[in-house]
View 1 (tube, rainbow, N blue to C red):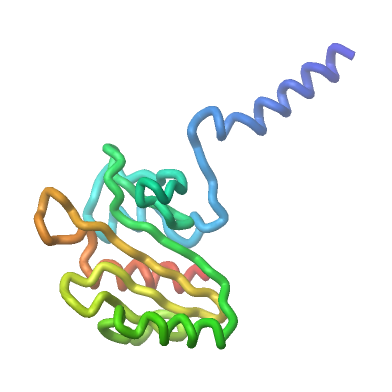
View 2 (cartoon, rainbow, N blue to C red):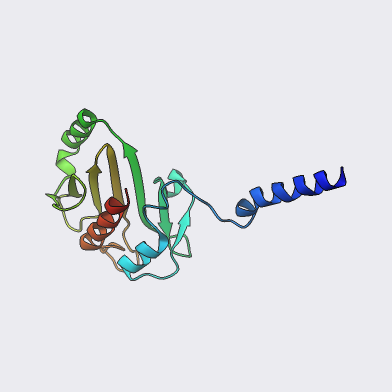
Length: 159
């Protein structure tokens, strides 16, 4: 009986260890990693923060600096072709340009500079990558549109 209790407690600790250590896992973290974001933006100390729309962290993956300042959010959705066309029509005024070579179709926005998001479709998946404005560099985003496009290519390649 004592062995069963010890085995049960051990298994329970193994299951809870990632939660207790603060480690979090997402079904999306295989598509975009901390290292990808750091390399693209030449940033250090990037971490994933939990979903919390009240703090701006409304993506499936939310990347922030060590102080909690959001750098990038990534949102993944599954859409039917008719839903994608409808969404794109609704967003028409927010789109600046199409971007070839990323998924089946990709576009950036908003129309004014600096652009701070890219969305792309690959199959029935819709992915949005949005960066934030860097308060230390007024009017600049943490990631420029070229860096966002590079990250989008990484994600599209892993889907």
